[in-house]
Every structure is written in C-alpha cells, then in structure tokens.
Length: 200
Ligand code: ADP
Image: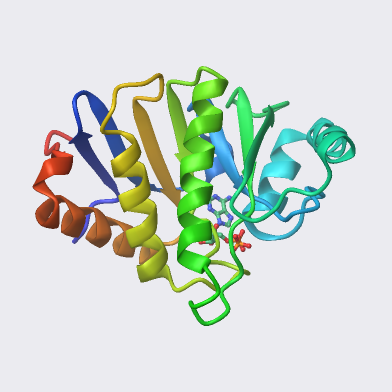
C-alpha cells in the first residue's frame, strides 16, 4: 500500500513532500488557495480556507480587488493568513479546463511559478499547495500533477528562500496520481536531483 506521506530531497538543498490531508491545518509559512478571479471565496478548497481563516480574509481579498481589480488566471497574490496557522494565504486562479488547447497547461504552470515568486517576496521558507484546478475547474488530475511537479521542481533548482514545498492532497486518488508524477519526474529528469527520502 502507498504510504500517505512521500518525502523527496530536491535540487541543492530543498524538500518536496506529498501528503494526504486538509490544507487549512497546515503550518507552512504560506498556503495556496485555488481561488476565483473575484477573490470572493467559493466552494472547494477556497470555501474551506475562508471558513478556517475567518471573515478578515474576505476583507483582505476585497482590499486587493479594490486596488488591483480582478486577478487573471495564472496570477497570484498574497494576503495575511488571519486565523490560520499559516502566516499567509497566496491566492491563485487556475485555468478552467476547456479541452486542453486553450493555454490551460501554460496558465497552470504560471500559477505555480507565480505562487513561488509571491512566497519569495513574502520571505516564506515553506509553502503548501492544493491540487489547483482539478476540482470544480475540471483539469484532468494526471496532467495537472505532471505540470505541478515539473513547475515546482524546476523552481527549486536554485536556492532561494522557499526550501520546502508540500502538496496537500485531499483524497487518496489525487494523492496517488501526484506521487506517481513525482516518481516519474525523478526518473525522467535526473538533472532535477529528486531523491526519495525513505526515512519518511
Ligand atoms: P478548482 O476550482 O481550482 O478546481 P477546487 O477547490 O474545486 O478548485 O478543487 C481543487 C482541489 O482541492 C481538489 O482536489 C479538491 O478535492 C481539493 N480540496 C478541497 N478542499 C480541500 C482542503 N480543505 N484541503 C486540500 N485540498 C482540498
């Protein structure tokens, strides 16, 4: 049986983890919200994060929307974590799956890299991601997992402030697909130096 916690060393001195769980419980410096462009909360992980963070999070999101307008797909913006254990919530808007030839892969990749950049800007050392776009937005999990792993693995090749990336997957099926994507990436791209940490 597949364990529900995979840990990898990656790049020069970073860690990549895949866990089955609820992202609202996370203690990483930042957690990522799969938001919508209006930043008004919604269903799925977005609703769960707003419920756990309290009403102040919606007020922070409204402030941002009033200042910069709606957040286009592929972009990311950070707010305080309010009542969460995480210091920050980084809101990103994934692509809605529309067959795959409407730039969905590029937009999804851009979500992951912009979240990492925003985490750097906020001087985070650790960040947790949900499986962006694979719920209500309908992105096929296998393809989304490959993009998520590749984007994050590419980003972690250079030492910067973020040294731990954790994927917090909500159901065993999604968790298994992400673990397979990580193992495949490790095999196919030895230059990424992804090494399974079997102590976990
Ligand atoms: P999107 O609209 O980007 O598809 P969803 O919230 O509908 O976002 O789903 C994205 C993923 O987040 C799905 O795999 C869903 O099961 C998962 N999810 C829902 N609630 C949580 C949670 N509390 N923690 C982590 N993942 C969650």
